[in-house]
Image (tube, rainbow, N blue to C red; front, top):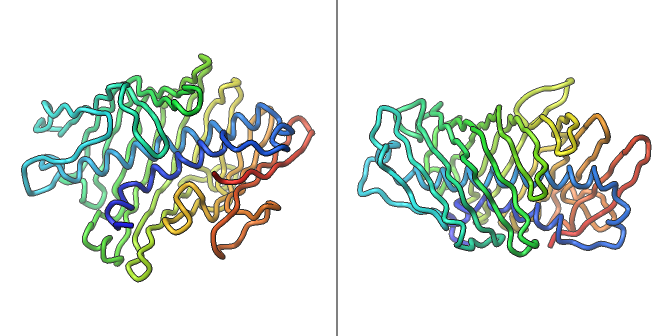
Length: 316
């Protein structure tokens, strides 16, 4: 796989995993508590859609002079979107990404509508260490035609910080990585049945390229501490209960096994009504493979008012 293309598709991978969780039809999946299973899917769908947005924005602005690229003309595009650059050379460089709702974009198939407003609120260039982007979601809707047109709608803002500076040449050579810190304080997510949830996030996403093997890898981890544990999100579920999502083990995936088939990662969500734990990178019995080869799937465990259960689902 071309290294640059692989890096540009890194975040889309996580969205593929969330879709696989809904698509796989294992016979013991019906045993899962419906609320805990739904919340587990919500956690992955929301996280992966956010990561996909990060990827699109990062790939777009690296080619734009007002965000620090020295060459011209402006280049870059996003599937199913037009770019409004009328405020590009304001004191705060600003872009509007407007989605048309009609184009089906692959990996996985999805249609998007609404707007993403992107502002460089700190730093001269996005490649500078400590530069900060503000990304505002304005009725940003992601619809999945292969999943009976289910969709999610985002409204709110998040902030991305370029932690170590982006050296694209170093990334291609495998001598450096890209590390982003994400914060969100007011994100409201609405689902296709009219229910909604509110989210705050604190996580880091690191990815890089191993030149010797031609493999691109990703590591996603929580970036705050709650109750003595590493956490990456918290808020209110679609059921009106508060939740916290802890990262017991960082998410890891790569191009060798496929982005939608992580080789590691343990996430636990605790709510006032139930708890649910997802362990990624397991064999068919639900035991993690420990970084040896590619995984079969992931294991879900839940506790709903003292009633416990588990199931193992295969990646698609």
